[in-house]
Image (cartoon, rainbow, N blue to C red; front, side):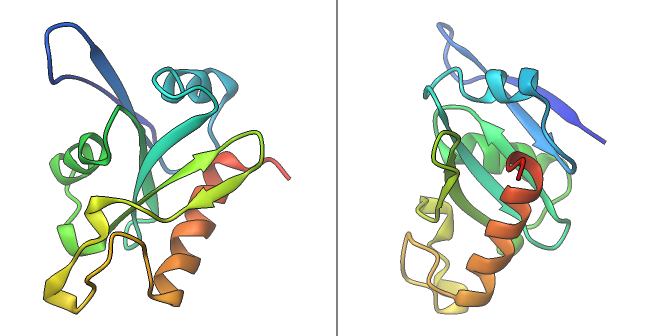
Length: 126
């Protein structure tokens, strides 16, 4: 199932956030890379094994997942560079003092692994 959400955080620019639970199509990749060419911001729900991508900020993706039923403790952010297939693990979303995670970078190896697997399931074609 795929959900498309158009959010308008300012009057000048509507931002498309897409929730994925399967491989992205080339058209969907084009949509989520409109703001940052060749790159997209991502928030992953590690429990539901879905991600949201697109928008200008990680909070855009996070809010769409929360509205779709995700819970904050399951959400971890990062990004994906399509040309190099590189995953990054930096986002304000990752700062979670309630579970002793005091970094914007995902430092828990098991969480990093889950986030990377879900991102590559959606965006990597090798």
